[in-house]
Length: 142
Image (cartoon, rainbow, N blue to C red; front, side, top):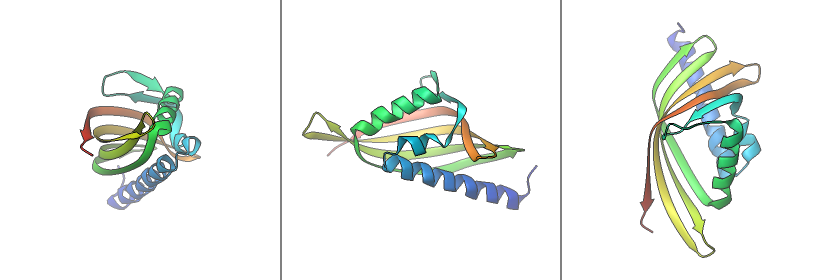
């Protein structure tokens, strides 16, 4: 069981990884964004469908091709650490403005609760498993 100081240090490391993810997503740098995920990633969507890293990369690329701007924030609700694994539960709130046809734009807000399992390797922390527990998408009036 890690000490409070060790837990705080790991939380700071994970916060830095989340900031990198947000920066890469905003910059539409799919390659850098996907480096945050382990090669053996399992991503369980809110629907219960599980996909791997390659499918997630295709999905993210499709999203980014339509997004004009985005913003995201998260709140960690829980963090547990065992050896070289960290499991956190987050509530993420994101907004994205997408292009619809050539002239129209729509803004969507997503509120997602998820459980993220991180594995520590020689390359640093990588997300190994994502479980989307709840996801709500709302179209904002523009």
